Length: 472
Image (cartoon, one colour):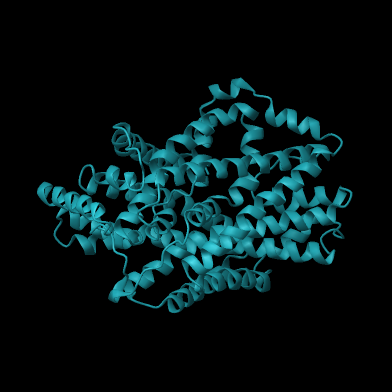
């Protein structure tokens, strides 16, 4: 088995010298079909940023910072972002690119490289875990996108600003079959983009939506800074409360926030990596994803916390913060209707870019493992999303659904991908794949931090998530 692994690595090196594609990865899909790729390096990074920037940045990160030490919370958070970004994010990108396929195919090829009898079939079965986990979390996330679409249209029509009880308004939407039309609209937009493919659909849309997301949130942040009383929110948010660092809960939730915000799941980032060309530096790409995801969280915090303080409301977490508390803030703010539109446009953008990443895993699996066309694969996933998602429109139902998947499935997927790439694949293979496209090789730290530290942290996330009932 060791000789087989060494031969594969040697073949990879020879292929790179003559400008060919390494043997472990395929540029063709099932049946010899040419596999789509990212057209540009920037497009790939923005797509990965789009997958990472989502609801957690808007309704959870500001709450975590405010409640767990203010600026002091950023110390453990940034430590974990750097640690996970330079191990897990690089690993999932490089794993996907090395194998040229999503989790099912990648796990299967890793087992084959190890020389396991029937390894391809076993690996594909294991790869179903992150693939189905991605589909499940996407189905729940689509419900939230439907809420955001409803709020955007209500902002445009003036209905939102006219509400006398925002809690009751949201409760009516987040009820059994209470938002079917907008739920289906959100799915239609997402799948309509995905049918176009990776380079013509997902990449082009992310190139527009992600820069606009940041611009829109900066506009809102500037407006919030002019509100009377906002300074108290900045003080609460930015002044470090160092005693929080002595509380283990601060470190646990900082880890959870970093882990889930970076979209580590053994699936979405891996699939996006599988469309990546060999000349792209995944270390640089992972660094940019971590930086822009953190900036998104900080900008959101500078919007949410000062705005809530300015009007004497409570900083809560989850959907109530976005759909009840912030909506009330804009009701009381001069020209609030305009800024509500800006906010919910940005929220819809963030939700769509994240949802495309989540749905891409099962779509890719149907294309590569079942041999379906892109359109047929998207259609199958769309039917599943509608059939299951419509029964999750109740706020409590979708919350329970998302909790189960995020606690018991998502981190397990990340753990399995890490084991496959850093332990099952031949020793040295992961480092070699991560170095493709780089002028400077990675140091020996990479093997130690990926094989031991990252795998250990991922296992810890599973345990802590179960113990705390969710940490991200």
